[in-house]
Each structure stands twice: as structure tokens, then as C-alpha cells.
Length: 473
Image (tube, rainbow, N blue to C red):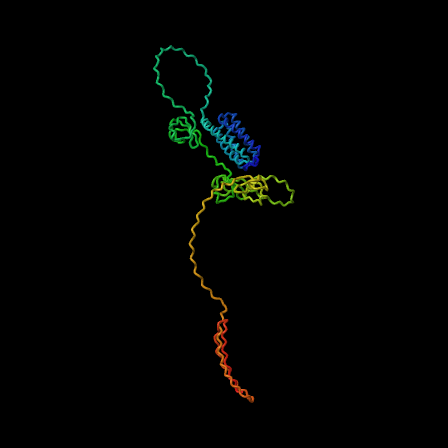
């Protein structure tokens, strides 16, 4: 991976500008100690020259307007203090401390390699250590050492010589006077230490102690009470007001009013197409209207639609990289991403460096990592299976529905009644003359019809009745 691919941050700075900023930080480290300890006109002038060069560098930079304004105001105040007829050493240290805080916040956001960023941060820390070491000496000097002895006035004219008197008789030598009491011990510097009530009875006059951020000197040996309230201590340097908490980058997310009470200072949120940074933890209100948020990148206004003839297409200028909202990475849509699009992939957050990026965030150089995925927490214990609830009561059976219409079964066929008995055949007589036909005997009565039997069963055939007697021929 090349140095260019190893760059992390969101504020652009060229390689030449990186080298220039490192050189300016080294010059600050060289010129600050003599300017504060000696406070000669030449040493302060050298420091002021470095501050002017640093101000010119900031003015030429492409830093965001908010970062640039903070640095410019810190530099202007420091330069103004250094131009005083008698510069205040403590005031200069205070101004330089605020300037270094602002420089550190900006350096952490620069898009540079880790090695260069580490070098810049270490230079700023070294300057801070120098200021902490110099502070007690500068604070004592600010108390004043008394004015210089004025020059002797002009000698007046000699008066006339008086007449010489007679020499007196020499007196006897007087007795030696008693030795005077020892004078009080002078106040000196015996090293600075944190105030400890258990050790204070052993402090000597001149001991320097720190308490609640302020520095005091013990006026007497075995001082009593607490620095700041006891008359046995004198204030040397009062603690400065706590500086505003530095704002960093803690990931980009879409603004959610339900989650905003849990935001920390430095969280970056998007809202209505613009990007904001939370200045405080648990911010209130809505980005764009609340003072708890600072605008980082506003949404661009929509250009008016032209009505004239279509002109030739001009060359497309390079797209500045900014924060254009957060979206889940989609390879089908990535050809339409513009430079500055923030995407998430695999739990990490990336920013597109170019239009129509290729490849996948995390492996493609067209994306820069903004925030890596957090480590997956350990799997929680499996919960126990709850007991099976009791079975519900079975409901009563519903009433049986009415039987539908259908064909009833066929009843059985009744038994056929008996046939009447056949009459006895009479003897055949002589064939005589054919007489008249005899009367037909009456037909026997029909038997009673039996009840209809079950379907399919044929009743037994009734007995054939006897044939009636043939009449006499």
C-alpha cells in the first residue's frame, strides 16, 4: 500500500503544506522558551515572526471555515499580546496553550499519513511540556522583583568650611552589645509540589505548592490551613478557565431525535442533506437550529433550470470530497456514487474519494476508511425454554343439523294370495248332439293382496286354484 493510500482524515493538505507546517512547529519549539524566560526584545520578535508565518499559512490553507476561524483568532490574540510594550509572560502562555489546543484538533483531522500525523502531534506535545516547565518561573517573574535603583542625583555645591573645634577627651571603650535576634528566613524557591495536608506541617517558608490548578508559595514554615483560604500562602499563578472540550470524529450517522440524548461530543450526524458535529454530549434540539451542533457541510442549493439553447459541455471540475449522507454499500448503485458519498460495509464506514468508485470498500483505493467496525461482543447465554401452558377447555359439540331430503328404502313385496282349487274333471259322455253352451261358472274371488314386501325379495308364487267343472255339453 502506498503512502497516499495510508492517509486518514477529512481535511485536505498537500505534501508541501505538511512539510511547511512541521517546520513551523519546530520553530515554535525553538523560539518559545527564550521568549518567555528572557523576554528580550529580540527573542520576542523572533517568536512573533514565527506566529506571523503560521498565520499566513492558515490563511492560505484549505481548512474548513470553522477550523480556520478558530486558528486565526488564537494567532491574532497571541501576536497582539507579544506586541505589548511589556508582554505578559503568563498571558502569552495562556494564549499559546489555546493555540496549541486548536492546532492539535485540526492536525487530528488532516488527511495525511499516520507517520506525518504522529510527528506533528509529538511536536505539539513537546511544546506543551516546555510551557508546563516554564510556567512556575514566568509566574514568579510576574510578581516583580522591585524597581531598579535610580541613578544618583547631581552633587550640590560644597558649603563653607566650618571652624575646627577642640579635640575632645577620648572616651572609654563601651561594653560589647548583646547579639541581635536572628532575622526571619528569606523566601526562596524550594521546588513545586502538589499540596498535601499531611505534609504541610513540614513545609518551609518558600515552598511552592499547587492546589486545584493554581500555584502558591508558603510565606512561613509549617503553614496552616489550605492554599487559597489560608493567609500562610500567597497566590503565584491562578488556574486558567477550563478550555472547551476538543471535538473529534466519532462516526457518521443519520440524526435520530430518539438517540440524540446519547450522542457524545464529536458525533457527526446528517440532517436534511447537511452534515453537523455535536459540540457537547447529550445535545438538545435539531441540527441547523440548535447551538449544540456546528455545521460541517451544508446541502447544495438546487440550480435554476436554464431555458436557453444547450451550450457545449464544459470540462467537469474536480469534485470536492465532503460528507454527502450515509448509505449501505450496493455494488449495483456504486457506479452512481459521487466523491464524498459515505457508505457502510461489513460494519465499517467509508467515504468515496472519486466519482463512480470501483471495487468494494475495505479493499478498493477508491474508498477511505472513516470508522472501523467494532469488535463483536460475546454471545449471550441461551435463555431457558418456558413451560408449556395448560390445554384450553374443549368446547361443547354443536347441534346436529337436519337430515337432508333423500329416497326412502322400498318396502318388501307382500305374499300372493292362494289360487282357488281346480274342480274335478267330469266323465266324458257320449258325443251327442252339440247342445247349447253351458253357463260359464262364476270366477272365484281374488285373494287379498299382501303387504308390500322388502325391496328385492320376490314373494312365493301362490297355489294355482282348481279349474272349475266344465259344464255339461
